[in-house]
Length: 500
Image (cartoon, rainbow, N blue to C red; front, side):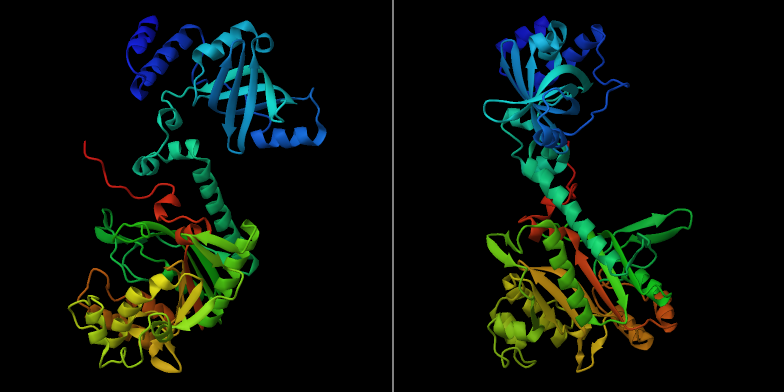
């Protein structure tokens, strides 16, 4: 131990050196009969926040409390030490005085306790001259020794990639990150409660699918050895959920993971969380109304204002959400004329705006959708429903009764990104079979998949008129917490392997 201390006096302090010092402390602790990771330990009676609240209520300076948490800051003043202890509820200041704690325990604390250690302590509360509620410590115990310095001590956790790869350090050292994930959980619970209060049943459907269906996307493929068959991680739970509606479960929802083997960006992660809900005897307009009401309820329950910041824009969730058809949005927001986007002229518009179109045969509806995606979508900052999508890009939606070339469908955009997608579910098995067969001729076979005969058979038994909606939990959390990257609202985002 003495040799290690001399070496450190001659060399600059580094995280590696401190790790070695802490490992040496472990040896020294065990030599003195102190277990760094004890099997028997004392549980706290309160949290940091609760003891502050209790003290505020009765100001009883004689009442004893115990807490446990992570040591975050230590300030030594001779025979007195001030420290900060952090638990799930927040922080509290500790006052550790030699003549209160006792000489032996005071020396143990000074010699063996480091920033990052998990400890238990007990004592009474008082208010300092600065007005801070503080625990006067009369007993301590090590509960788990930390062998590495925390990020703050070495310039903070500034590396974004390290924050994602070592989320535990991000949560320890960045209160804003911890609060964001707590808020995400609260948002999800509010959604769940709203659905349950409206008569929905929460269900779980398979993650492994024999056919990659329910959405247009490239799937992840795996192999089941016992059945000797390929399976797909689900890209959407839609088809299974609609089978439940056929079976008489008129209102169902699932909050769970989807997987899509596509790009990674600030908006996309290959593994993401979706809410999908289905309500029988409703159409896409009912789905829009219900989605708007749900989001407003979530904001009312979890935020102090209906106006929230996102990417330096004020999002006003208090007003009725804007509703536009896709064509009207291209005209009003994209700035194009009806003549320019006509079937005869749209190719020129795409070319003039340097918008690439897939080389295979692309329909007029698909071209409209491409133009919308490139020239309108990013401008939809305030909550906006876009309706009447081309039917050829909506294979599971009913046709609009007023226009057979349009789908009875909507997408919700917030902050220039898609947040939700919904439609009047296609319940005509003949039309559904025809659309599935048409998909098989599409050149992009990685995104369009095999004919799902089992689903067609299911709706042949009768799928009632149904509204279905999918809402991205990750993106909704981004909008509501002013977060520009999806990786900052996913605890463990997908990361590329580091080559040794």
